[in-house]
Length: 182
Image 1 (cartoon, rainbow, N blue to C red):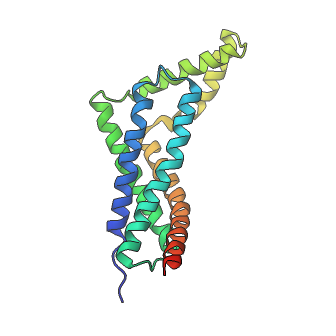
Image 2 (cartoon, rainbow, N blue to C red):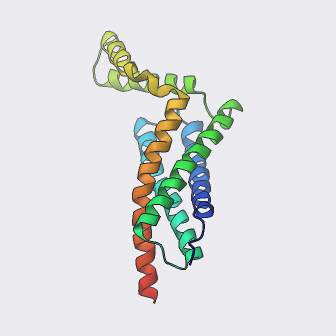
């Protein structure tokens, strides 16, 4: 028996992770200046936990539905990796469109907001203005990461790895639950 194509399942997982990622980033992008660093970190952590789970589980669930529960952890890893890597590309494209239309802040605005938050936090720790500027300059040595192409490539690779892990877990859980039902 030929296995069904994985692409429709990967596409479903990618769409879920991209749309959920955009929806979950809206509060961060709209209220970035008003939120505390701790609230931003919390939203980011929530985003990092929910998106990979949702995308990988959607891909594995869809494939198992088509395959009647016959996929293994290796297939789940491939499904999850594909879904989250493709979802990362979709999310990047949507974010770019939102930035171009003014719905999301530009990369320059995000950089400025980040520097302002750093200055504020370092000032609260008792650093003087010169020390704060030195700390910000030293953090800018990794400025190549602000290049949108580098961000997309890093995002696709990272999400692919995370997706493989989540997909393997999802396949084990979905397959195990199907075995219990039988």
